[in-house]
Image 1 (tube, one colour):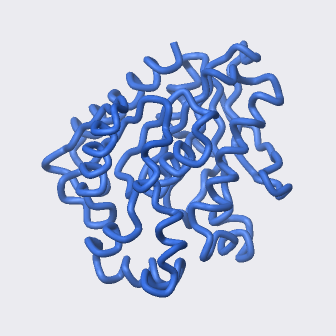
Image 2 (cartoon, rainbow, N blue to C red):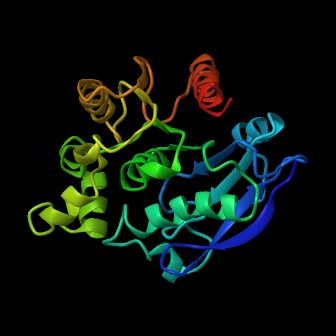
Length: 255
């Protein structure tokens, strides 16, 4: 099933481009998944994505937003979340769930979300800022705490943080507000965290700390750490295993 290019309205009235994968029997009782790309300066294009193709083959509606911060739509769109990361981009992804319900393409009680890297971060901001929308979320190699993520990252990534969110000293409140780690009491649904032990971009310590806090709060957490992987999983067996774990987790939520 090939996707349709669609546009929907975000929380503030801005229009968001996205790819919509619509199974033949998609309707108001269909399970759905919002799949969030990483980057954030990247985008979903009109091509083949094995993960999304598999989800659609199960009869699930899939929406892949090119939220504010994505490439491919001009400089203004690419920089629209600068000093607002975890703000408008979160809104754009969460608005996708409302769009699917409004268009009669998903059951409002069976919408999950999943993303990798920055998409994992936005999965967690969506779960903490809009907890009522989701049946659960799977975050792969995410970061959750701007302060610790910044402290434990490479120097070039620290430069990117400051360039896009200011310094942690000058913009402390913004860094705190946009760190889902401090709001993990809010999610009402199961959370999956998948990470690599040698990740220099989104250190595994981020997911480990989130797992421990979620468990202490009585939340349901599915956690898996690959001891021989970094940010991008390079061993075929690990890549397949991680994707199977992600699909199995989503299937439990949406069945």
